[in-house]
Image (cartoon, rainbow, N blue to C red; front, side):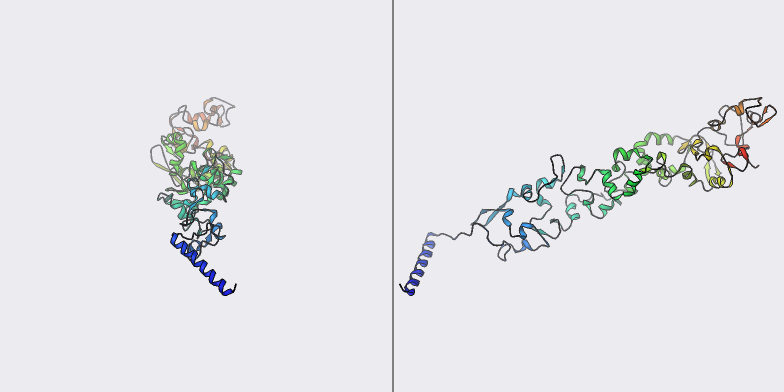
Length: 414
């Protein structure tokens, strides 16, 4: 058979086949498997136009996530209907157990937060940034408050929270106090060297006093300093309010925190410094204080007195101002722990010198006559007794300096 005859027969056969298909109304089906990239100019070119591409898309492996539903109609469904199981084929949920706290979108659909094909962010977020993504569900964690936690202000939610799940409440990266120590290393160091620790920190953690995102108060406190302290120390603070005299640092500036560290201290009672150093930090100048008559009198510069006078009162020498004074409030002048006359003269009573008798023997003014109780005698006449136990008696301060003196026995120079 010649090539010419063979060619005519082939053309005729093809024509006959096409005629039969046309008459029958049949259509040529598209391939049942995708053998070329879906991102051609005729199909889905925009799917690949992102800074960061989903791995399967970058490898032309669209069928990892899509399942052909109708090849002729070119329709598809998602694996597992687009639920979390689809993503878990590749993204193993390592570390997740039934007991962990799971971010709600993770159990509903990863596509709530993540773009399926590509994104401008490394995490393939639908939003332009992490903060925008979080804001979609958590639009204002500050509630308009003025003092904002650093990570919140920097829009860095993942500094404290896991994005998917966590073993800790509120999807935190670690237990609350451990988490805070990641940034607040100085507090961790203080805790390691602490002699005293604030019970609230130990038992409740940082969130016992501080807000995690924002606050209207300095240091992210949940309330004003004294009101914050009141939440645990209400009975103590209310009792102080009934005292006749209050220590001024309690109502000025940082209030309780003027003297106490709110977290940890190398001193007892959470004091910021050694007790006497703390007192002399304020009593290094003349201070006006209230009297019993609701007037004021000048309290001299105690720090200067101690520096200029070598003989110190026993409690002062031991650095123990609290042996004579109440640190917070008192019903007695100068915040004394017990009663003592305010004036130069005082009528005698059994309670007149209670502040002194906390340490000193009462027999100094009780024994009369005596040759042994005191060296301040005229023969066997007790001159302490003579000066104090009468109407318009001379008080101890008439002869003795209460803090320091150049003379032995704290005798005043004049």
